[in-house]
Length: 340
Ligand code: AMP
Ligand code: MG
Image (cartoon, rainbow, N blue to C red; front, side, top):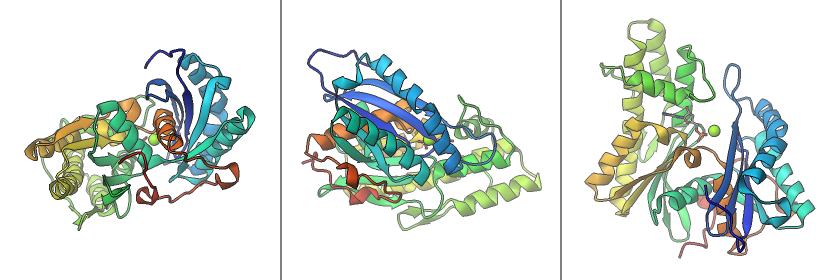
């Protein structure tokens, strides 16, 4: 995190697409002054959108205050407010959007709606120095292989059903593991997988450039319930199978585009085994492997602040009456005029 300078201009970004409520503050030069993330952890079961939205509303003022303290600036020093306009869960998106609209109106500064997936790529580039990567974005809600071409980020491959992170999370829950604030389900599966020795045959589903994880999840849960295999071996096999699928698709996109960088981001990017697989294919193709530091790989406000700046500098602002949230806003729908 950087110090502020007298000549700096700032944007505050709000992320609230799913389970995390986060506020980031960035200078127009891309120095991140604050990135406060407050995660909603359900007592049991998956994310209930309305419960998560209630969490976001409850923690919002605290997170905003902390971010101003951390950045060492006052609200009236901001030049713009950006927010994740989509894709995501309706109630969660609407909570963040309402706060962003209120702040922008009160401070009389522009509002900038940002696509969450674009923001993951842009902050990844900012943090790693990657210029034009193939990106593998794997999180609780998304599994996307994308790269820039002709004015937009193009989706080369994606999941046809659930996201990779969601697959790991549901399996962990079925196995009776209990999520903690500092230990997400995916990290628990990773830890158990390190002790696994046996590779159990599981459904490997790549269709064209797309992946599917629901059959894999069902098969792994069924084997778990039969009780014939050790949990460690199931975690190991689930990881090996699921990670090989996304690695295969990423490698094909890399071979096709001949890009010189591979960017791994999203919450699942923290996984060391996945990192080593993606690093392996990057090296084979003479590309640089770039992985994003965890606080900028998971859902975070800094990525929204930074992407808001990139858009704002191109004159892209979002009038309040057009700032409705877009639950299914696809990555390739967004024009990216800041890349030439
Ligand atoms: P995000 O959706 O980007 O906020 O990331 C959350 C997702 O990342 C959840 O599905 C987590 O289980 C997953 N995750 C976090 N740490 C790890 C890890 N070490 N290995 C695999 N998945 C992880
Ligand atoms: Mg999250």
